[in-house]
Length: 171
Image (cartoon, rainbow, N blue to C red; front, side, top):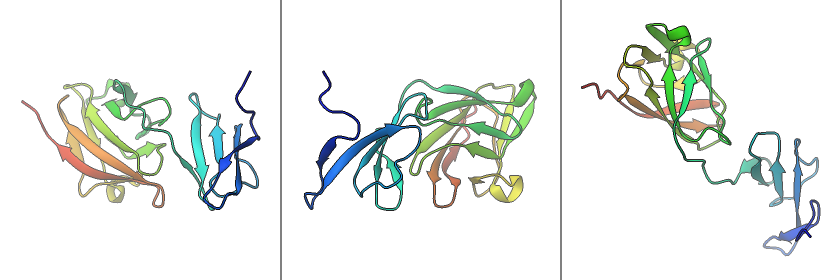
């Protein structure tokens, strides 16, 4: 027997107003501030809370082993629900070098680390002013060693990944 059912009273907010828990692939149409929605539109459902104007994820970050990503058309896609926060990037089709202009996906405040997967392939992370994608970096950055790393923060208000740090660590 379940402790509660979807749509039942879930709790009370600070003003003792009833709050509910919803679940489904689409957000409730008329949520109250502070209500929760279990978004089942992803492989691993994401718990979200309504702020009064937007749904924000309240899940803890998914940490775990790194995930391989291959550039396709200048882009990779990250999924906060399944991928974790460490990504090993390789060039499209095993090319000697490839440009990364766009990182699809992400939730506000998400931090990710990108590392080159293959010493023989150079991944060039290009700034939005050069690559017309969504990566904000002061300059283009080449990762040509599997020890090179770049850290990014996603800002949903700008729909951009902001570079926090980059480091060439070739030995």
